[in-house]
Image 1 (spheres, each protein chain N blue to C red):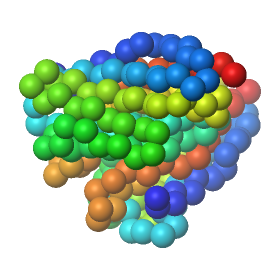
Image 2 (cartoon, rainbow over the protein chains, first blue to last red):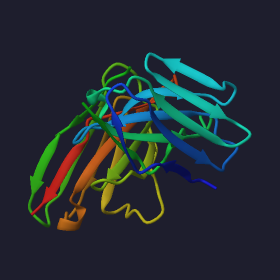
Image 3 (cartoon, rainbow over the protein chains, first blue to last red):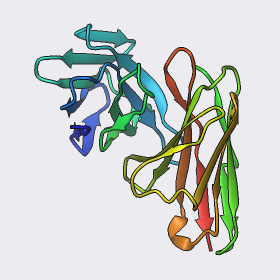
Image 4 (cartoon, helix red, strand yellow):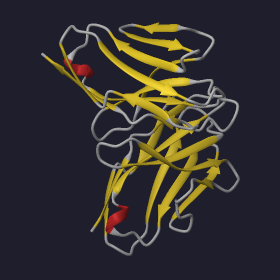
Length: 113
Length: 114
């Protein structure tokens, strides 16, 4: 119930291509879905987040698509760049509660020049 | 985004000693702080949640006597790894959450116990 399942585990994309990472959840009480980017040896950095009353949110090259009925959400990185090579984590939480984040397993993205 | 500072970034200690890691929210008041542990190529594992001025809530399987958490003020939380052993070597990350209900992460601390 508390799990967030993330796929794929790893992803290789050519420069300029679209990177797509998917997540699925079970707990319908989740009301906040952030994506984090983590570089080796660093803490995660908030990339973009969405609430379930919105089906899509775009910030620059990053877009979250949210499908409430399917309990799925995804991150799209347009025009992927070598500098986007990092590990990406989706997460979910109940904001009115402690805000404890439940993380997906992570996706290691490599963007080839 | 808000700034969360974690210190030290790296620490090496001898087996049996204790190590303290600090987490500070620099530009906001953190009503809730979280401590995570991350093994190589794995996701973040929540260890405990703490609210300012109250005892931390530990996740199942986390030894509260080994991982002491103090959230003494709205800008500072500390994690003390007591009687550290090599298996405690890991990447520890704190996260702070304030009134805007977004969680921001520190830079992480690489602990190596020799």
